[in-house]
Image 1 (spheres, rainbow over the protein chains, first blue to last red):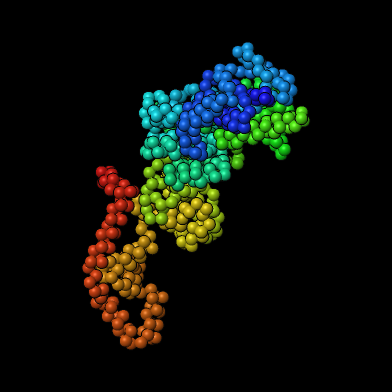
Image 2 (cartoon, rainbow over the protein chains, first blue to last red):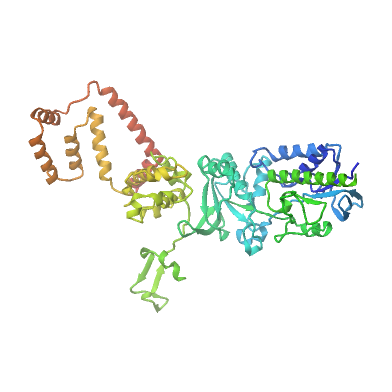
Length: 349
Length: 253
């Protein structure tokens, strides 16, 4: 019997890796720092997922049950890894609760941290209660409460979604595209229009990156069926006239400044590197890439390798990633770990 | 103000006072130049829906501003101010005053449909131009165009008789547009007809002009057409809020 494989992080990637390994008879230990599994989709209270349209609590909830109920998966919630030593096939992991684990490999599925809009004070978050984030609107939808202005609970008649909040912004040291916000925002705009048909939704963008097949399902559909309006303008400032929020910027297509009143402004917040990445880097001896995500080795021979043999990485820990791709990467990393196990077994024999 | 933005200042937004004194200081002449604000202060959300309600405007909401229509446009090649892409944007965002600046050229669309074939989103910009011209007329921003008057004269006659008699159409059209019937080209054409057409045909044409024959049993068809036209007009009036517009104009007077 080989030693178990350590999986760090219980989001979509971690759950997928655990399930794959267990299916192939490989015991694993899933360590999650929060007190429950599911990662961002569950902890942040996402509503319907892109592109399946399934509710997050059903889709990811199903993944949680499948992994957590497997006899070969040992789940440790509310726990972090504080030390990790040894070499491939023979690691020792020290946990925050004092436990010590002998493991053969580790897969880091530590995900991301949502951008904190307070870091863009000019866009009004934290100053005006009706300036919210995409996560908050997800929660309004998933809780069944519906999209309402937090200040007084009224139904908004006009909503602005600002894209690239915490993405593609050198001013605040975030040069990356967070990849999913355009699609999530187009989807959210349609959800708002569906719930509140009299509410007009405007999306302020620099570029629209509803990549691949999301083009039809989100970008086109939001315009053709839901009459969502897209305005090419990077907003300069969100203020208030005492009654409404005032969105100021330049409409670049008419070369004119705009100061438009809105009931609600939504920040499409991007994906930051996990705030714990520096600690993870130190504990696991893995390098971070220049943006602060966990660095990936090239993927032509095996996927999900880091600079340290026996330590793999998958999902949004490596950079902004979709749920689907996080799951795929986790399965690939699980496969890479199994390949390594096989190779080691052959060498021994 | 940076020099590159000077092109954005419109002459009508410049305000110069020959004589002006502010708090005892004489600032007459160009010292007192003010530049009116260009800021767009709100979106008129009704505008897109109004134009979309008129025939041809149905697909305006699909536009993503690629500019293919303007690039392919026959009229734009002659007049760079003729910019369908730009107008579609103004309509979608409800920038009415901006659109009205171009009200006297929008009708110049020649319906070549190059834009229709090139548009990646099936917006049918030609239809939008048609709907927009129609909207400008219905809202009273532009006078009825000659082509609209011609359409009316033509269809009125079809509705009345079920037939078209060219002579009467032309007569009515010239009368309604205040043009003389005896235009030199018209005189030449009639002379040529008298010289070259067989006597029998001329007699029949002359009679038709005088007695205005009707299609047999036209009454039912006429009633159906008139009902449809009335329905359409009612729909347009409602979509554009014309009754309210007329009402408010009356109250003002």
